[in-house]
Length: 355
Image 1 (cartoon, rainbow, N blue to C red):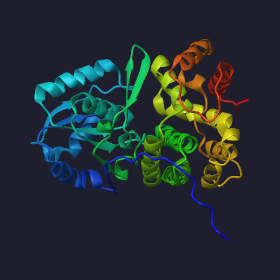
Image 2: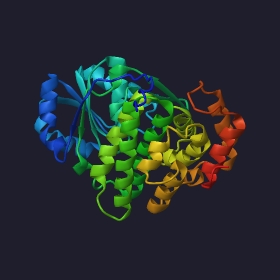
Image 3: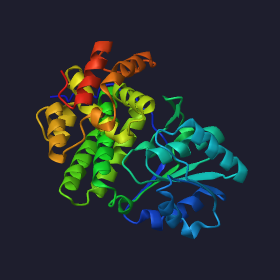
């Protein structure tokens, strides 16, 4: 019997170097910067993350010419302008960011506007560090785009830096990475994306369940976040990310927790339209059905489920629906009408099952 021929597919590959291992941030960072040949580095981190960033760069004193700690959630454009003015003053030829998605996002805006290379040391599971996607918030609206120049040229993954991440935030950040995997599965037909996403979900689920027992799940979670970000970089974003970006930008909801609360409802909405592509998700979650598998994972780790608990009021839901509908169309395996957007956001707001 002849095996079935591989199905046609399209995939965009991205350049980049990844260094992964415990202690890598302390042991490999200087060598990676030297390999790039940079001479004047701008350090970027949140106010709370700057002490760690400065500790990691103690041996790089001659390279670090300025530090920007004005990083804020959702990368407000005002902070981008502030960082750019500092960079222009010191004429840096590279950016080293230490932190989560907001720090990486700020560094990406420096790469977008000044065309300098970025080296990233992630301290959350956002996955932004391996994508060519940039974003900034202007007047409450999240603006995003895609440019290969913003993808960090080097990413140094060190699980040691994440083992003390507060468990509630680590849970939400890990689920944000799961969302990258899930949306990639229904947006791309590329085999590599499918393999990265499936392996990513399996690693993330393992790490999240380990974390829920009070143990250190950072190795599995960081590995899974890398796989998730890589799949997302190739597949792009769709309905799930659109809803979350609208909610975060317009109502200042926390990024990772919003993704965690919305994901089950977008998955339930799309599942019937992409059963074949989501079979690997069910397998990765060791379940008969992807929705059941994700629900069981949420139960096992007591995951955040309610947008109301994050600060979204019932009175804001109509405005959120308007903003989603007014946004540029995104790819999705099912047509999306206002009533369906309302059902997804309302279910996520209440923390109940999608109907």
